[in-house]
Image 1 (cartoon, helix red, strand yellow):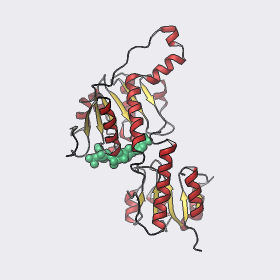
Image 2 (tube, helix red, strand yellow; image 1 turned 30 degrees about the horizontal axis):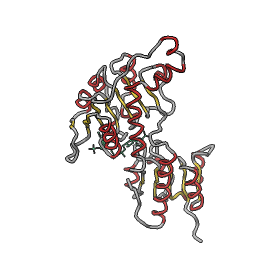
Image 3 (cartoon, helix red, strand yellow; image 1 turned 90 degrees about the horizontal axis):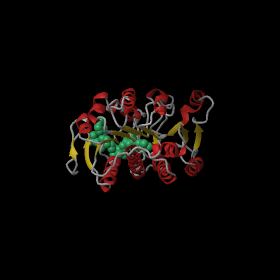
Image 4 (cartoon, protein in one colour; image 1 turned 135 degrees about the vertical axis):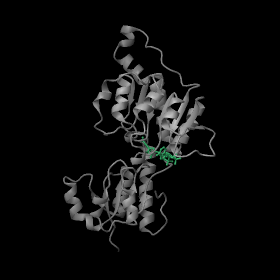
Length: 314
Ligand code: NAP
């Protein structure tokens, strides 16, 4: 029997699929190693595949320690932390997990939209902390119906958010690198132009250098004191110190964030603000979706080692 291929696990998948991987491959647990560098030095030569997610850096230098690397299988759709160019130069395919997570991420985007406009988390605190009893009704919030949602990044997730927002009778506008001919929504050439036309600015574009700091002070000021920012994309897309200032100075009405610049050790200045909703990067984190994402990792690796076409190459 041929030896099982050696796989480096940087970020594991769900337990059921980890068992499948254990059966088919020899796994080297970088995620559990006391000294990950020492592990890499020891086994790098024989590694043929990597299992990780596009939230953890994978550099050209790290991959140089794996001269026999053949495939990088990501358990995420985003791949902004992966040096895909270096992989391409070495002929190493990268796979990700599109589509299977779209609905869950779009659901969270809507939940965050509701939360920042209607103040559900704030209301929860208001009840638990006794303010309702002691101070009476909470101040009125803001309705969704009839408002405009401006989506930065009208891709798979952006379109799923748009469909949901339309069901709540919101108008939709968007910004991307180009206008799409087959969508009925208003296109804006610039993020600031979109922000000034929006009540809710929804970020659903990829992270990485091309979108770093796309939400500047000027974009936040264009959104204005009645506007809300929702971010389910990547923390890097927002100039976070400027967002904090805009929230502290009430230059925007509120924000709801699933992603941050320095996860999970996020800026504690967020914790004391009442006009921000915080989530621990859980857009795709349901058992169903994480299972489907993990299965794509297993199936892409299986296809690769069987010499078959990959299911979801980047
Ligand atoms: P997608 O289908 O590739 O859509 C991305 C959209 O962003 C495209 O419509 C693209 O449109 C636009 N875009 C790309 N570069 C841009 C730029 N420089 N400026 C403005 N727009 C740009 O990807 P998806 O599956 O919808 O996923 C989108 C992102 O969501 C992922 O990359 C990931 O970062 C994030 N995500 C987050 C979670 C979470 O848990 N919070 C989960 C999954 C995904 P154009 O080509 O027309 O510019």
